Image 1: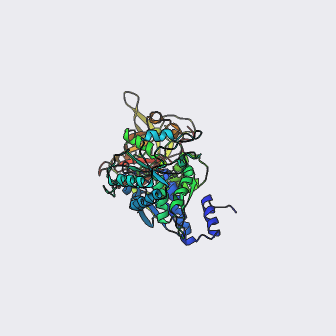
Image 2: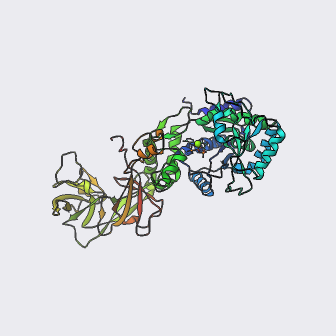
Image 3: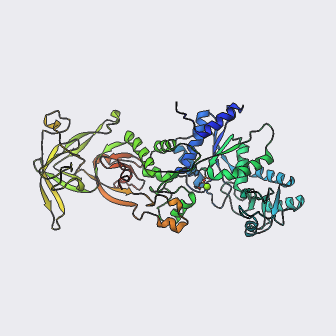
Length: 555
Ligand code: ATP
Ligand code: MG
């Protein structure tokens, strides 16, 4: 039998075997509210929420809001919206900022135990003395300050009588540690910024490492799961816990898994922010962005994102997943759920010369052959219809299964037509194709003619009733498969695909008229599309989510 468990589940199972109580398991997802969540976060969300579901234990959504310079309420709201949209429910909503007092009290305890000191050198001096992985660090001249002086200075920092940067609080660990993070890390700094939640109450703010592990402890998280880049932080995480853990309390365990990297895009908030600020995209929810909000606007269903990260799985080794796998997951889902409709993106006019001029009849067409319960709808048919320009060639070889002069094709759900004559303008552009139809060939009419096999079936819309819509098509945001390797922002910008978006005016069947933002469709033979929020009542805008097939493999 195949072992379906991932390595984190094995770790947990070992812990349970060793006597850890299943009822004490607890997980958390801890985003910093300094930007929008991206596809990488979907992995972290699924890892934690899936475990909570599997072991039937609580899960905390914790906002790691310890840096008021970068964090905003709007990000908190967006994160909650995204996690909910993905289909997950947290059992507790927490904020690291709720723990500021406790974290401060523990810092006092560190000072009293001679495990922390106030540093009064500049950040440059601190960095210089820190050494390198091959060069030992040097002790700060302030390392041996008396406990009394440290306490006095730290309270002054807290009261706001020190300037930003004048002093910081450092843990007193080991300036010769082979782990650079253990070389007396800074745990508090002065920031005279209003915090989205605590406003002006605090001017000293804890650093990430100090706040993170201690927040896990306060919430009694059993397994604190993060990405591999935090592996070197684990030693510090454990050292901080050593300073505060009490008997009979759960001591959280940090374990690391591989980040999700996706080809042709970036999964770093900082770099995504750069794209937004430089105007390379139209915002965090630009349909080309790998953010959850961008993917949603592009038409990716939440089920597809979850299926994607579950397919990728949880491992300990970093790798890059092909963007085409994400597209495949979207197709799989949309094929089951989207209503089929006909939209012509690049129209050329067909005139059916033997069809009554004033007549319009209604043609019935299935909404989704994958889902019999979805029913059918009626589409108007008349003597003038649009088809795709690329679906006609006056002459073509035998492999062209579309319309050519003297040959027949079926208009989807309607009649078989035969092309007889092409009308050109003065520049030799085709402006009209004159055809005749076989009145006995109507789809579903049961006649012998209606069952006649022809080589191609084309989508179409009746010219008179067609509605004009805007269709936006997207290409990959980066031409380079590995933009995350860019050394700096200039290089990153150079890797952008200069033509990753295009827009056309298309003709759609009238059933689309009352569509709402977020409605999803399969435009037959063209791909999956979603109604964009830029739409207005008489000016619908569609985003192409993904084509029906993977066109990139060929390229
Ligand atoms: P970024 O580096 O993109 O700014 P972050 O790590 O700072 O992201 P946080 O909001 O602090 O973002 O992360 C919340 C959680 O999501 C963390 O546990 C982090 O390890 C995880 N995470 C972030 N990016 C990825 C990724 N690409 N794959 C898997 N997990 C990720
Ligand atoms: Mg990060």
